[in-house]
Amino acid sequence: MTASPAGASGKPRGRVRWIVCALLFAAVALSYVDRLVLPTLKPELQARYKWSEQGYADLAIAFQAAYGIAYVLFGRFVDRSGAKIGYAVAVAIWTVGHIAHALFTSAGGMILARLPLAVGEAGAFPAALAAANEWFPQRERALAIGIFNAGSNVGAILTPLLVPAIAVAFGWRMAFIATGALTVLWLAAWLAFYRSPRQHRSVTAGELAWIESDPVPPARAVAWRTLLGLRQTWAYMLGRFMIDPIWWTFLFWLPDFFNRQYGVKMLDFGPPLVAVYVLADIGSIAGGWSSSRLLARGASPNRARKTAMAGCAVFALPIIFAAQAPGLWWAVLAIGLACACHQGFSANVYAIPGDLFPRGMGGSVIGLGGLAGALGGMLMAKFAGTILAGVGGYGPIFAVAGFAYFAALLVVHLLVPRYTPVDPERLA
Image (cartoon, rainbow, N blue to C red; front, side, top):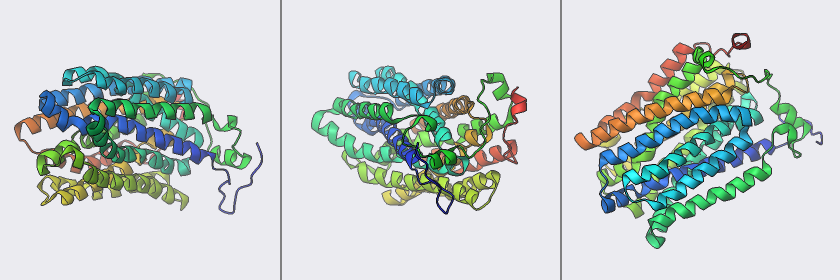
């Protein structure tokens, strides 16, 4: 590796870590494209094949159950195999499941394809966070997470633009096949490019020193009971339990909300959904940037992370009134602002494993958090299905969404009031 001194700002001239971040961004975008094809087609397939609201809710519950269980297993697998192999295995599994959706027409049958999609996508985020922990020091980590997590919103933007056009021109089955093929191309790029920083030929000495500027305790395997005995673990798990269900609700039901409330048809989903997820993209990057900026100015990680989360919680509140909005675009604004706040909030919650746990334990903690988030998502899906079948409106669902972030911040603060990293002696 060729030496490259840091600039006046102290940052290195190398930029390989940001290429890694771009690959992670693309993978997250593709995972959300694949995840959202079915919700985008839901009004059309529900009308054609007579799916019930509860049947669709059961499909969402099955996805989240498989996702949560696989998240825990993949978290441990990523700790042992590393980000490169973990991500490759995850992408291969989810691509098979995604393309298999083309084989079924009933909501029950779709579950058979949804399960491998859930299993594979469950492995994607532990692998992405492991890569971020490997390639970014603490002062940049939330920003990097915010950037690649913004890929979820790009995927959500592309899906309503691409999928209806493909479905109308070539049939709904081709929407699954064509979008699934894109992940194969990404997988080839990932396997060709990704290495750990010390093994990558393009990393300069300056960039490597920057990446490794944080002290790194030696990696070690830790028993589940030990992890579950730590307040830091529960802060992450309960934070995910409270906020993940809100994002799942947006993903699974937004097209239905626009169709039910404002009569938006499949080919017209694009503009409102694009607007929502553009705002979410801005929030994802801004949430990560804000805490990274505070850290750069000398704030403690405790103050930086929680200040960013508190701001997001405040600005998410207008979602409470989205179901009573006087018009489509007022609803889009309220929902888009909530999505922006969710992504900004989550960028800081997702930084907890890297901030508070030794490297090598992150995947296991992330897996437990994913399981907690999926359990919360299952409860929210059941609640949403019951509300829509009974009340017939989204008011109660959006009310829960409005207060979830305050609840999550309160729990995180009570469990880790000083944001203290885990003492390695407790893991011995």
